[in-house]
Length: 401
Image (cartoon, rainbow, N blue to C red; front, top):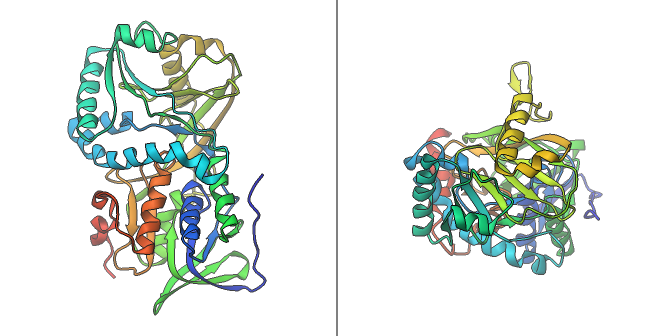
């Protein structure tokens, strides 16, 4: 059941906060604001949860991902600045179904990042040291312990980092659960409502929306994923947000045999099994972002690259050989937003009073935390931990006006 979509009779709407983007982040921000009594309107250009939040594989990966460690220790140290968010999100997901009174398909049976070579083991050792120093519960398992924990893995696995809080959530349900909860609290939700223009008028933001509608808001939140950077440009703000195309696959259903979230210390790989028995395979293999007249066309779906699919499936069967016996039923692509320094953008945008953003990083896994932080910012509440590494003001020099 999807949340009711409201259409106001008046073409000009006055709200305290306009949230742009109807994925997990936008719906979560709308919920936390509405929970505190804020008058919220959420505008989504397509349908709620139809973009990245609904097209990812639902991993809850609180370890540093392969993309964060593949370029060496210094890169991993930078990525580790986000671990306070990982700790917060790990706790948040545990209680989310009860809070939202909805089934999000959350399972946290633990995750393994595996290694097949001595070089990969060394990389794991460095990663685990960083994570433990930041407070993440994680341990390094040797070959025997790995076989005991996950006998379905290939004998080629010589070690693994085990994080007991990792797992998965259902991306088809999570954003919708937030949207339903927000609507129950009075938030207005509009789908098929894109943003045409965004400008500051005194102390108010004036926003032109699709269909000739408009909105006046004290605060505007950009939670539009890959579109966030372009919408920020409407307000005269430059932010280094880039779109990245990714590939995912799902096998036919089979008996339950993969208990954990699986990642790899030397390959792009993410694997998990759904409650229905499908094995989901991803991990960062690229898809091509289409262009129109030489400009990235974010409204078109990324195009599948067959070498990416072949590489992803090869990595999957090398780590879990049984997966190679399963037919692939579906392959799809999606796009996610990354920031140039690999850390997220969360907070008030400099030189644009009343304009806020939440994007980048692992936005599904960490979405509940991004949303709570941003809602607290808008409400003027103190942050519960240091979030300065994610402050948009670190890129303030990119905006001259």
